[in-house]
Amino acid sequence: MTTIVEHPTFVTHLECGLTGKRYEADQIHNLSEAGRPLLVRYDLDGIREAVSKDDLARRPGGLWKYREFLPVRKTENVVSLGEVETPLVRLPSLERRLGAAEILVKDEGRLPTGSFKARGLALAVSKARELGITRVAMPTNGNAGAALAAYASRAGIRSTIFCPADTPEVNVSEIELQGATVYRVNGLIDDCGKIVGEGKAKAGWFDVSTLKEPYRIEGKKTMGLELAEQLGWEVPDVIFYPTGGGTGLIGMWKAFAELQAIGWITGKLPRMVAVQASGCAPIIKAWKDGLEHAPRWENAHTVAAGIRVPQAVGDFLIVRAVRESGGFGITVDDDAITAALHRTAREDGLLLCPEGAATIAAYEASLEQGLVAPTERAVLYNCASGLKYPLPHVSRSLDRHAPIDHAAL
Ligand SMILES: Cc1ncc(COP(=O)(O)O)c(C=O)c1O
Image (cartoon, rainbow, N blue to C red; front, side):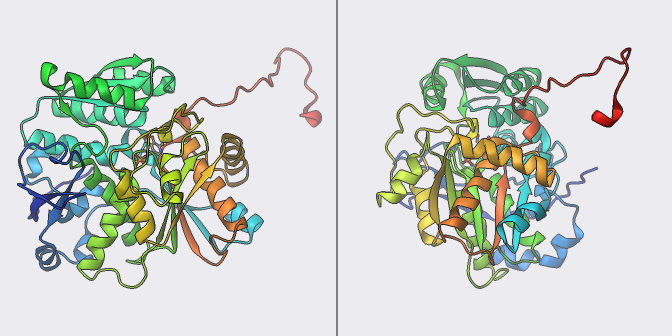
């Protein structure tokens, strides 16, 4: 059982990610006046004095152990479904085949609702409860909607969710089963986002879209805090992240900055690698073109539904994190994603989601192109359980009444 006890909190204010303008903490906020994401700022000296690495080591695993680094003030507002510490799973077959020293998959599929979206939505919904919000709405490619539905229902908050019509069936069904009102929309995630934006005032929804409220990123930040703690308060050389709206990449980069500021990690930070599909790669294009903002990607398509995001409001934060870290952007095509998914399942016994498989394909391509060295410790993010996606049909069958040639099986 997860026991969540009261801890002091250290939020000082919020800050526009683009202009740096300050906003008051503990008020209801969406985007800044500049139309950009708000970032939560903390009294980091206060955190350093209040908690130690040893304190954290004694607490049960899971994202709520990092309470001092999180914005929820009161434990009574915490909405939890049993968030676990997700494992780092090595891929020995892949390491052998590529001659690589250490490839670790952070398998986020073990979280409630089967994806890392649980981290962001656990925080966003808890903070929404703290701020007295009773109705929320969100566009989704599937996993975020599932997490929002589950946490909102648990908190007694009504949720309305819009997803592209071709969102994986499991996602649409789980969203509805977990108590949300869900609509399929004949468009992409940004088209769904427009419906939320336009309906907000009329329907009284609070908009929980990626980076349009300040707290999902704080939940995703725990991927970075947890990773550093798991590695003995060290960071890997390089991180491969399947990038859609980019909350996870931005969140981890924020986590490392905060840990560095309090002196818990020292030395070089990891190179952050944004991975996108070649059928939808606005961020990689912006990075290559030397831009901060990424124009909308037209005719977006990929088997990796979670990273089919034609335009991201936090584009500049993703590009900045990649640049500041000395990382890079890379695209992979759908065939490479599917091949990596099948091979990792068959050879290393780990069933990835397509977005996770994209990071494997990207790692292999990066190694081949000399962008990473085989001696480097690499962490790849598998953001959801492979079981949430359509799986290949198996046609082999046996008639138990007919003679069976066992030796031929
Ligand atoms: C499985 C999976 N991977 C990656 C992503 C992209 O995550 P982010 O918005 O943090 O870039 C998503 C988002 O829907 C997802 O569902």
